[in-house]
Image (cartoon, rainbow, N blue to C red):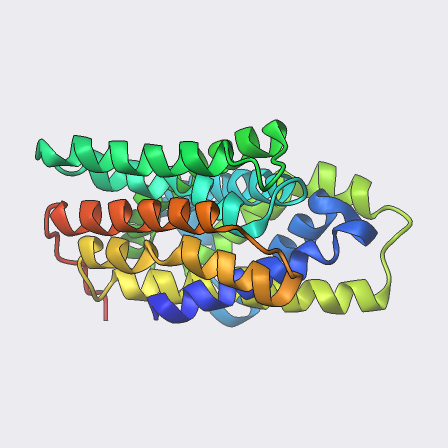
Length: 275
């Protein structure tokens, strides 16, 4: 489930970047979230009473994080290559893995990841927009909050109800910038493309991740998610023809290794089973 979600979301991000010229990052992220929300609301059909409980409040907070994460990531993606953006953004899940471990060696792992990110951002062969780097770091902060909240939402609400509520909240958060970007440019073709991005980047991977977190320890989840920067770089190369140099691939590898080792060293918490 986790690996399928990783592949899906990176292919979706590659396709989304191709739509920026027509709808802008804000318009694409709004289409992605609102269409995914409509789809999951039709499938999950969450009861309105769920909004009044703790789970509903957690799902709404989760949705705000989703909206912020996706908006800042797409704005970064408009300025820097996909593989670079995801690698920098990965400071979020890496920070969670290190923070949940109490071992001294994790400081060294954090340093290894930091060295990879510094090497990535200071490489002369790829011209990186500093605003894009900052936005990717902001997305990483939201990603950390997403990881911490996703397990709680999955444990509090049944099936995909929590995710459906979260996507609706995320689409409302991004509505102002999304509607502004789409005004006068929305076509049936763009709507269809947005639906594809919504499936690949939101509905499919988020559903798979929530179900995976019900079945596997969070440490194993973190190890598998550490493959995301490499998959993003590969998707950017295959779909967008974004070619990275040897130094960039080395930097991505450092972050992947540091993230995987940090996740392995994190406490082995059993995932909740809600069947």
